[in-house]
Length: 276
Image (cartoon, rainbow, N blue to C red; front, side):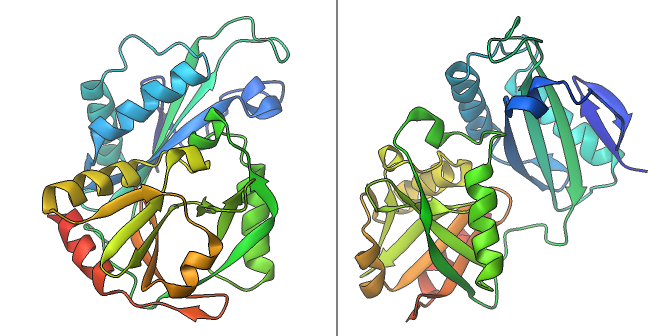
């Protein structure tokens, strides 16, 4: 049997927590964090808590007083232990507004659910076969503070993933309303050209990803040039490498995008730095 934590209470997976009338279901009034587990413990707790606080404030939800970084870390460790995750794993922490009401909630109190499952790899492993991606142009991301958050309202990503499936691709790149590169369907985008790494600015409507935060920090410590900038579609045509990154999966290197092929030498180097 596997378990979840709901507001700190251990429950069997599949326990019914709320009805169809709940605002998390009706309005997508929620957000989530995807967490990598190594040796039964959460990675990058500081970065996750930084984004957690930012998202709670942006969505005007009240953070539970007890939900400190130490509590968050111990909750992941407890659930990993209960679910037999001794080495590699991933967790999902979902916060939702718990008040009743229509669009205007009667309370901004927040509840949370933590899920966890084992995965094969303990450390980050670069994909042996490069993935194939396309560019999703049907719907573009707007410039606003919601664009940076991992909201429970994910229809844009659902439709981008449907495009990926229809085109028989592994993933796709999303554009902002200016037509520039924003992110992947479930990841941040990094591009390598002439040994310099580039990633879209947060103001370009990209997700404020935890792995993005980590990579900026790792690059700075290692003396690797990593620039936050604007990225036009045309930049990919002359790039050497293209990566998609997330906290749960690390770096995935892209082999092809709309006829352009890429290598992975810099990706190999960076995965080693992440594991170190």
